Image 1: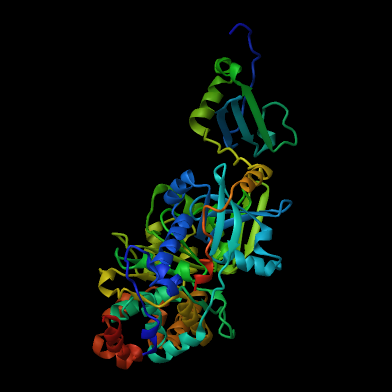
Image 2 (image 1 turned 60 degrees about the vertical axis):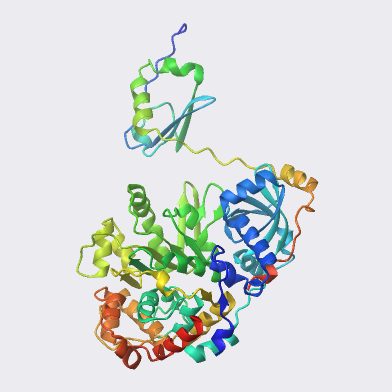
Length: 116
Length: 446
């Protein structure tokens, strides 16, 4: 805590859904803004979704800032785990690798033709 | 007897009877049967598939696609198989066919030779069945023992009085109905909810139906709209897009999670069941599937049901907003309190799928919109009663219009009908084809 971080004012209406989660980059806050007029956080004009990443090294400090209570509340009361998007498979790679595999191991009898 | 010729004896009870029904020609060929069972397990049993692909790079699977999406620029279909694996299928494997045919192909059970690469499967070869529907054989069997007996025997059930009334609502689920009495061809979905005591063969029926017809069986937890309609994350089309019917088992289970899910999903279910419009909008993505799909809801009878009639009982049981509109859309709400041990009625013989499909398709052609000649509540209930009467008439079950009206309104159940129809009057008054029971018993219980 050598350098004093800037104070950050966070005042968010209660009906705005907020998702907080931690990942390797730090604390991420995703805020869906329902009513922009009520919102008093940064300049989120024309934004419908605000994404905020607080780098790891700042997280412990932030907890002691003005926003700490709000953040703690987010985490305790509103935070829910966000499922990461399924990783897209590299199609070229898997088809490339599949080509190297021989199908000799299996006898491909036509079982489908037996389905009645 | 004709039907006797097509009966298949289940010789190994460890093999599910759907294998016997789907592969009737190889039941005597144990070597081939073993290969089929292995490929079928690999396609549907996730534990078996995971262990198999941990040891092998290549496999042959028999499966049905549960949902799919198309990577348009790569011309690849990504499907989630019943065994839980993702499978990448190049479109070229289906041959150069038009879109309509391709859509039909994707509904079929299929044999896929797959390679296991980095935790996913890559299709190398696809073999499709030429699904037959034998109406000729079906006609011979129906002329001999009638529709209802033929369907029950096909499912491996002895058509006794109990089974006839227990299975009537279930059989309705296989058929389509009418929206108005002026329509000639049945197309409108029939939805059925049946709660019975455990061990009455609901799951057995649902599984066989899903293998024989283009239906999806969803046991266990209540499916999400993601699985049912559309997955916005992966872009995959769900069951209602692929199937003609969906059967949800264990619908009586009421965990807090299920109730939240049901409350939020009801809106989509309501328009889907009534108008055939299944829509989802997640974030900025929206999708709409327009299709009529029969919905079946099966469950064990809950310990406490309060209400004046079956419809009220189920509404009170769930007690969530919008449930009354949902129940209103269901053609038959059937509640059986009597304990029935299905094992007492199993004949361990079945009629293959292609004949069962023939019987049902023949039955569909016999359906005619039949209006009730008694006073009945207007609206959906009137339509439900018309569809119940149409089906019962096609099955040669004679029940008075007043009783049909009560069944549609939920004031009367098929169990009460069973209790109020003694064996002696069954043949004369309710079901003339009941006379075949003795003969069927002789032939199947040998």
